[in-house]
Image 1: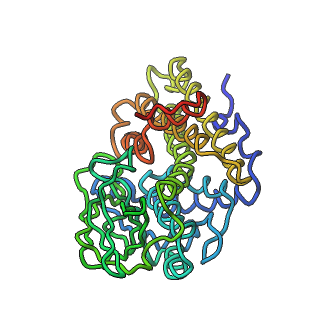
Image 2 (image 1 turned 180 degrees about the vertical axis):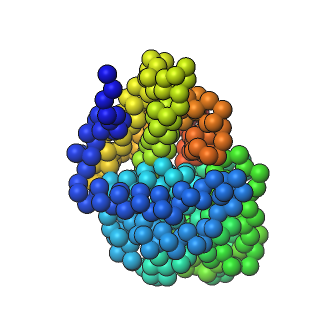
Image 3 (image 1 turned 120 degrees about the vertical axis):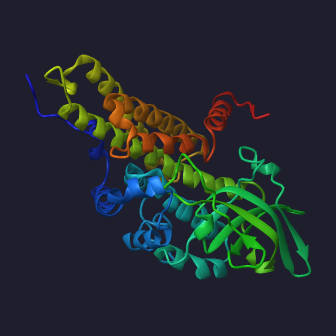
Length: 391
């Protein structure tokens, strides 16, 4: 006996846990993704080209750039609303969510949280509208999981700073107007606000990617970049500065991964209901339903975890190890869901007509950026044992 299907998340009644304002913001972003982003994703992914500057201005008009920050033209929404926006953006493509989270949770957050009033006034209003694009230079060719070993240096020369070094795997780098760059100094690691038209700065794009193709990824080359003393972020000294920014971005990923998983599962359910095998819909077979049931369970648990972490963040009670719980679980399960959904579509699942392989490929990057799974396991391990095991 057939019944009307229920959406997987409806089984968990997750909407009932959200405020009306948060649901309205989520619906607005979902509509933007449906109307503006989805029609072009296959083309952008296949070509490896993204109209980042055009999109940044549209995303600024939408109000999602730095949306959870207060003042300076930012919307000042709840953290949960920001998470839900990331969910809908990544339901489109991880690359689009990356553009927004690097802009808001890394570059803008660094200036907002650690910058001088002059730096905030100069950059944040333009970044909130998408007129100016930012990037975040922390990772280096030989220093990712251990950023404290970075070799990029900032040296004093009179009243100026001179930066020399390389950063790698930098989202938005080639299109950025400003880069927040972290460097070793004689006084610990410091952050610098670097206009990208400064002599000695260049950002060659990284090509031939198999993942995050609808995203701008670059190297940053700092060849004697001379900056005034006022370019340094005055509030940040040591690794706590960049790590606080990473926690902001990781929080967005907790929700974003749920969006990618939801899009995959919705696609698989729809396909299974229409595809007939031996005169019956694929959805009517036990083997298919077992897969769909297991994925529904993991999707719902991931969403519940994301909402709980959003509540904690809105109450200013979210600890870094809790962010690691969400990032580790939700990305890992989203990748497993993307792969399993691909099997339901068979050969059709490898084409860009459907989003499954695109999501799976993207999630391979999301799995290791903003902290690899192993790093987050060790953060959780340290929390529950009290022992650090990073070395």
